[in-house]
Image 1 (cartoon, protein in one colour):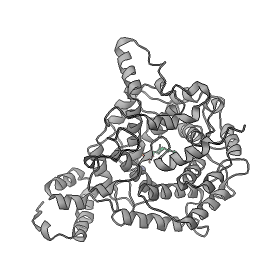
Image 2 (cartoon, helix red, strand yellow):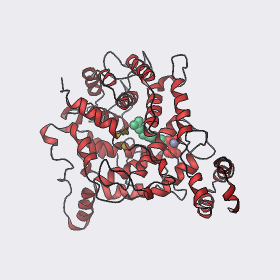
Image 3 (tube, protein in one colour):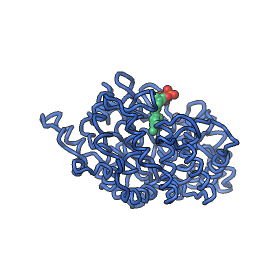
Image 4 (tube, helix red, strand yellow):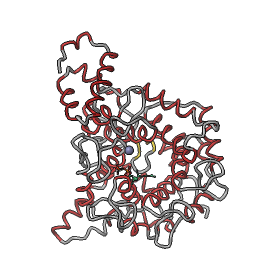
Length: 437
Ligand SMILES: CC(C)=CCC/C(C)=C/CC/C(C)=C/COP(=O)(O)OP(=O)(O)O
Ligand SMILES: [Zn+2]
């Protein structure tokens, strides 16, 4: 690539060059060539090519939030999800929605709250675990006492318990499908709201264990194929109930490490195409692994030394009725291992192949932007940027952040995918609430 015109290049010219040529190459799946071009340009052009267009993303996201009014019935059963994907993305970018929009979201989600507990996809619909997770994560991300107290914890606890199957697993809704995603959404919501107890935990770990496949990843249900979305859910759920030592972790790591492709992004399962959203589903798994490496080490040793890793626990307080502390204990732990994936390479995929310069993110070149991919590309980018940080609250070093340091996002709690400072605020608030059942 001739970079001789660089001295006169304006940000706009660099942008045009990026959208046209790079996007064309990427659409033709010549992603490796894009990276070669990147290596051949001057630091200034490189920095422009690698910029995260925060203002444009915020514009696209705010526009989406405004379209969520009752008169816009798009994706009607998904509106709590849209609230979460958009609000979480805005929060990662350091944006602010203002108190009027905040009130409107609280009112809307209150109308989605079922009188018998849980949140529906829209007012008057069926309460569902997925939209309950989305609604609760939205309200915790809003971060105000008004948002927190709009959640009826008593009926919500009843709703979660009613989803439990005698096998220990959970069903997404009344009479609905039973899978690892349902287990994760119950445990994540219950943990954040200080509702997690032995009844909810009972036998769910054995169900998740039965979903770990011969490849090492976790499937949605026993006998299915290992998949990044379900592996994220299964591993997070096992951490939240402090039973992660039951999984075969070396095999799981082996599986996930091979999911990062030559394009530098992650695929969800063997022999499928890479996709920006797996930056979080698979990238988040590495954030978990970094915190549980002593258990992994113990298991690896036991492969050779017949030592059992079954007795090692992540937190010592589980049996004192302190299950809801696990998310906090986990995130507060020092990270004593470097990331086990190519963090800079993944940032390269997100910025060059998933970022849409008009705002938003997409699965891959050739696809259109959407709010789901915007949320999980940004969440994955945040995981990458903080992947070398050892202590909670510390900022990454500039060389851990690809592109200009202004690309830095807020950090997210990987177990719940809630921006960390919002999680702390919610944790503090709900620690004051007791279990009233
Ligand atoms: C919290 C929560 C609800 C988590 C959901 C986790 C998640 C993303 C699960 C993935 C579901 C799945 C099998 C997608 C495959 O789609 P595909 O066949 O279109 O994609 P692929 O080719 O990439 O596998
Ligand atoms: Zn995707």
